[in-house]
Image (cartoon, rainbow, N blue to C red):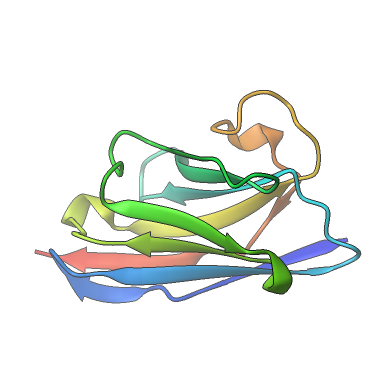
Length: 125
């Protein structure tokens, strides 16, 4: 079993920054890729960003491209999401997720095996 624990959420004014962390623990961690998703009240969960564990390639949703950066620390089994120029529409619960096999479409939540408990991000205008 793999546990994912997010941290770093909070409240910030529009234009501000936050950095989310997602630490993986449990059985030998062998993720193929790790992603961030978010869900705002009344909305469906949406893809934010993903990093391919081997090689470090990254992909972003158009809504966050140029403002958010996903990165990883292999030694710590931790993934980060640096969020800059935050907007009120970024307000959501942010979840990290890990996939242990390549399933072709990292932007699809159903392709992930493990999820964190979520961390709230609130951006005020």
